[in-house]
Amino acid sequence: MNDVITVGMADFKTAVAPILLLTAGLGSCIGICVHDPILKVGGMAHIMLPTANGSLGGNPAKYADTALELLVRDIMSMGASKSRLRAKMAGGAQMFSFPGKPPVLKIGDRNAEAVEQELKRHGIPLLVADVGGSFGRTIHFNVGTGDLHIRTINHGEKVV
Image: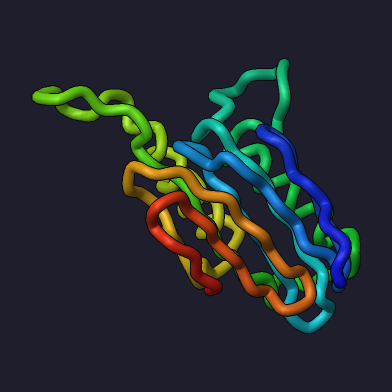
């Protein structure tokens, strides 16, 4: 049985196989998982907003641009090769809507786009993106295999 490390909101964790990383309650937030399949190290961040907008205070793990920077740096410090890094993400839902009104803010869409841009900036391929919809997700990331288990309410489960 693998040990499980929980990643909270606006948080990130890195680990070495055979650890599982877990984050629950992804609505408009994004769970981004980055993995070196040869070294079997990786990490997960639970991102709440697209950009820090130059904010010097607060929690850098809250934002796509600053959280991914921290996550990649930590994984690299564990010996990972940037050229081998691969990513998977889930979340980015539109959790609130009002009948007859267009979706407001679209934070989920903006979060997903920001994560994709940051991955491109770092040269990390995005292998899987299970984003959008109007339902939350809980994810488990197996640092050893790179498998991402996505569980939803009323929309099933899958491993990607």
